[in-house]
Length: 354
Image 1 (cartoon, helix red, strand yellow):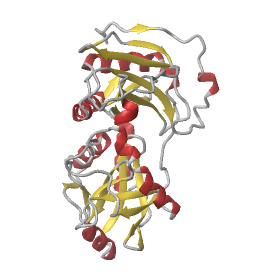
Image 2 (image 1 turned 90 degrees about the horizontal axis):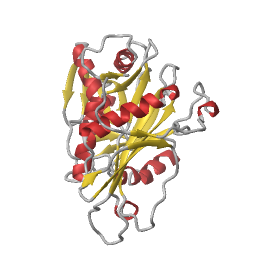
Image 3 (image 1 turned 135 degrees about the vertical axis):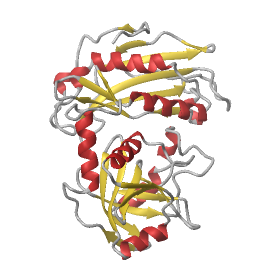
Image 4 (image 1 turned 180 degrees about the vertical axis):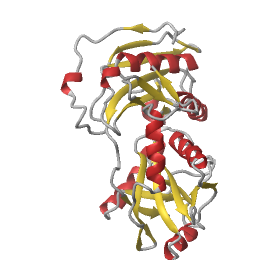
């Protein structure tokens, strides 16, 4: 692939790859050798460069530290069966990145800087991509307001960075979730659909409370009055009810998950009935009482699929049947894995293979 953007590359003289055990990974522990950096100021983006990964130097008045103008994406690259590297659904991730930035009044990097910069960065650090099944190279593009001025204002300066790191499979075992109605993750008209830092920081407290009670995550709702289901932890959520794959519809309080979109497309193509519709808490509880719900799982970039074993509703723990290889969530996860690694043909044009 011929790349058009002029990107300066300064390679590290001391790779840390030898310090990382790619067969025994911990999520977020290791970071690859390089990062892409590109600054915005005076109304335009400067020339991007790839440099050795290093700490940032920030003025204490940097606007992002005070007013929350910071947005990120979560993406993955995969080692394919022939050894090549595949960046998954780069176009859709860029489109979501743009929507998040626009919502936060932030400068949008040109598509060629995002795409071509990522391609060069991943290619440079391709040896960091694990070969172990389920593992991948996590890609974190993000932007923060870099202007140093402590007045409340929209920043006029930004820094765009991409770094990567090898990660293992998450949530291989089923998890326990608690339905949350007192606290909400996001409100209609707010920033719930954007991947901005405040959405995640605000979710920590109720999540910690749930963990103290023995649960792994919370199942978010719209709140106390006639609650409907929103998301599961930091992921979209899906249910199999009456042999139908059901997931809440996208809104300005629900993230447009790339994994969510991929799984819905695959489920349709496998012949499963799919419904994107509201799921009330009453409906979910009734489904457990009548045993018409057979599966529940989170869907997101980090975990891909997180099977749910127990759902706590109004003081009662409801337990789902065990999952097998034939469960829909495992069939979808397996098919997605085969496409990403080149075992199965990518008829959707999702893979960008280096």
